[in-house]
Each structure stands twice: as structure tokens, then as C-alpha cells.
Length: 160
Image (cartoon, rainbow, N blue to C red):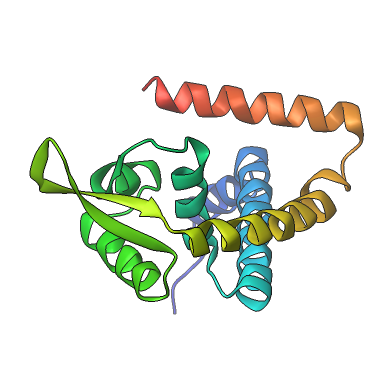
């Protein structure tokens, strides 16, 4: 049996630090919200949250050509991960692959009519969940400060 030593006390203090605690709150809330969104989207729209994120990207700027590589970067997925995801989405008729006109080795992805219809329903479902669990629990002034702070955090991370 190991004996208690000074390193144990330091480790316990580090584990109870306010920074560890506060960041844990953020991660736990974000993870639970993402899980809730995914569950509701799967139940009501038959798509995953990640599929919804792909459809957001494809529907954001109609007519924009979006490559699989760009989707992978935007969604922080690996090249094989985005390929498998697009395969599943293509199989159920949400997206289609088309050759890139300027580079036959590159593949573009576009939402189908069915994909846009599913996206519109999913966007409404997503908005309901986000409103209930992300917006409503926070006072309006606090909400604006929170989203501003999240934007600043994102900016700081993208600058490095």
C-alpha cells in the first residue's frame, strides 16, 4: 500500500483548482447540450448532430462549391471520417458528390432537395433545444456577455 506524501496534497489541490473546476463546467455543459441535440435530431429528423453540421455548411451559401476536404477542416474531422459521413449521408439522399470542374481529382459535396428539406426541419428542432437549454437558463444580459466571451475565446484560439 502506498503512503500519503506531499505530492498527493499538491495533486489534490491542483485537482480542486478554480480553473479546473470552471473549465469542467464548460465542458460538461457543452457535452450534455451536444448529446441532447444529437438525441433529439436522431429521434425527430433521423440525422445525427454531425450530419446537421454538414447540412448547415452546405446550405449556408447556396451555390458555393464545398469540397470534402473543406468540410473536414470546417468540422474538424479526419479525411476518412468525412468520407464515411458523406457516404452515409449520400446513401440516405441528403447530399450528392459531384466532380470539381477545375480539378477532376477533387470532389464537391452539395445538399440534395431532400437534404435541404431535412435541414429545415432539423434547424427548427435544433433551435428549440438550444433555446430551452442554452438561452433560457441565462439572464438576457448574461447571455450576451457569455456569447461575447465565447467569441473572444474562439478568436484567441484561432490566432494561435
